[in-house]
Length: 299
Image (cartoon, rainbow, N blue to C red; front, top):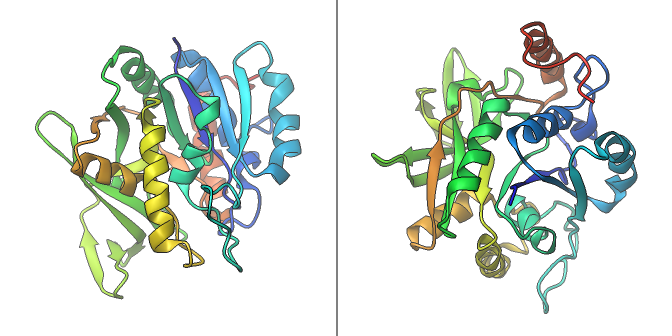
């Protein structure tokens, strides 16, 4: 059974200032998502599922349905604020989606096979998909998951702060600890993490960062259901609270409900967090095309 690619694209792109998920960055109007799907197809994935807001549906279907027809199976799942367990209602004033863990949870009925979940606006590189597909195809333990790690210094923006999960692994490259750093930025030649209490911590840049490219088995959905209820009980009345996948994964490891293999892939990573990031992404993609790693026209 071929693994599925689950693309998390329900975020509104508030810092970027628009629908960055379909923002053109390639020479023929390709978005980063196009490169993700192109890499996934040649790495052996059999289906792509988009997690989007329902009001994005027309834009996504117009962009992807026709050009992907016959190349890979396509499905859409909507992530909306009112997709809550029975007995829960959306609090007044809540506008922000419930987070990446909730996004994966709402795909429960669309996925029956091992799958890779990742961000729509991040460029991960072909080797990341190849390495992930090989793991999902070979691993037989239903509680063994995976992630692809990147060096922190290679994942920052020159134009503002980013949120990163910093990981520690054991001697067998299994994830042991993960800490969500919500505000990491460059300052006077150093890498700084601003903590919730207002203090700052210096980082080396060599830390292993989770870029939200995860490999899961369908067993993850039942755990996510339980974790989401726990989250709602504690956080639902905080307007900007989100349930992040790195935090949930760490809880699962701590409770011995899962183990996570950290995969290494010699791939470039870059993304569009702010509008000023876009020219850099365009330049990097053009460089990869010139090297022959991608065709000038993907589909």
